[in-house]
Image 1 (cartoon, chains in turn green, purple):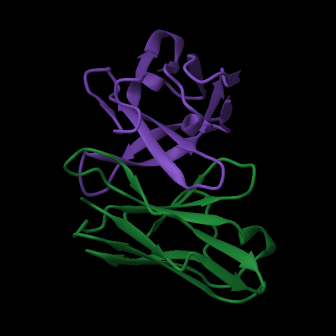
Image 2 (cartoon, helix red, strand yellow):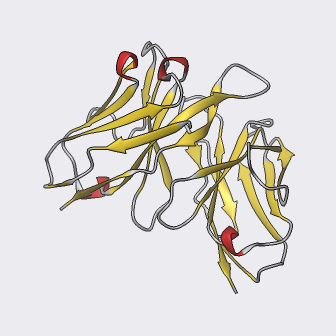
Amino acid sequence: EFVLTQSPATLSLSPGERATLSCRASSSIRSYLAWYQQRPGQAPRLLIYDASKRATGIPARFSGSGFGTDFSLTISSLEPEDFAFYYCQVRPNSPLTWTFGQGTKVEIK
Amino acid sequence: EVQLMESGGDWVQPGGSLRLSCAASGFSLSNFHMNWVRRAPGKGLEWLSYIRDNSATIYYADSVKGRFIISRDNTKNSLYLQMSRLGVEDTAVYYCARLRDSTYSSSPYYMDVWGKGTTVAVS
């Protein structure tokens, strides 16, 4: 069974600090990984696709990296609006399903 | 403006049925594959179902297989999710989302446009 594991579950930081979120796949997914942000009461928003490409309108403080099984999302300097949930998501494989990580909550310290 | 808007969420008793709709605007739904995704209270995002642009291919998560039916009407620029035999575990906000291909292949996998969601409460 394919598994996508995010860590940590919760990240407590202050505005202006750097946040690094991790996403690990149980088998290689090459670069087929996306990251989403979900603020309370809002829809998910695409941040990163193909592991490192920023989606349209996403600020440069968000960056993605990784290949194969280990990936990370970095927020270089946290803004107040960045405190939210973050999910990684993988390209469908066999069986053909879309898989999300369990999420990381970035909260204000 | 490119938008998706879900509707049809409601309170329903266990065992009941509900039909969700997703209206697209600002783009032609016929050009895109689509997903339904939900988020239950206190839980993460869960993929539910996929439908190809021409409806030729459909997939379901095991959790909803046999109970939910995805469909679309490209002439109405709309996507649907017929839900039956609902249980308390189906309580969630339901989102429709537009799929895009990877830069490296023609396989759709990430979701670039999401609706605001519609709430289904089963109790």
